[in-house]
Image (cartoon, helix red, strand yellow):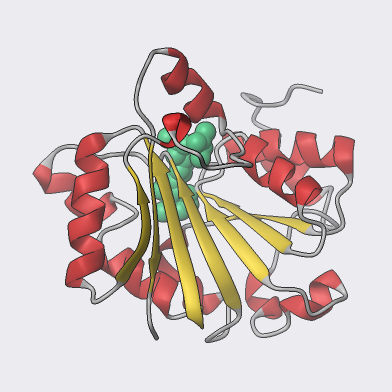
Length: 213
Ligand code: SAM
């Protein structure tokens, strides 16, 4: 089924409340009940079409994954994949990650992935970057004591900007990869953008940073 550009996209999401959480504020502090277990919760913000989060959920059944994506037209691609897999440990949310504390309790989230986030290169768009300090505040408001933010990108400017932003926010850089695909890192799960940009020969950067809340 291909509904990507169809006006009925929202209806399609609403037809699958078992996989798309339509009322996420109701689950604040109760996501364990939503999944029926107490496994750690990992978010991906800006899932795009969802290859990464679906593969992660298949590979790590002992983790509960929640994919967050702003654009309805893109979220339906994640739902299409989930309807094929029917993974019990994956929920999809269509919302803006700017205010995560509306949807998650303090310490409810153990890890957040940002993959190939839009770089917003113009200075006047800095506030839209998913590693701008207001977004870091949003993430830190829902993170574990040892909560990790894991960023992967091919955009050197966004990567450098993010390292500075993390540091100014008082975060600790735990591990940094300046060329992930040429490194000894094992078990990398590629995103749609990662495949596209690495095929062009772009270097992939990765960082794990902690909030030390
Ligand atoms: N992660 C995917 C990948 O690597 O293939 C998609 C990357 S795409 C460049 C970035 C995605 O982030 C877009 O689908 C966009 O809609 C989403 N996004 C941007 N800002 C967002 C926000 N504030 N909350 C949720 N999603 C957001």
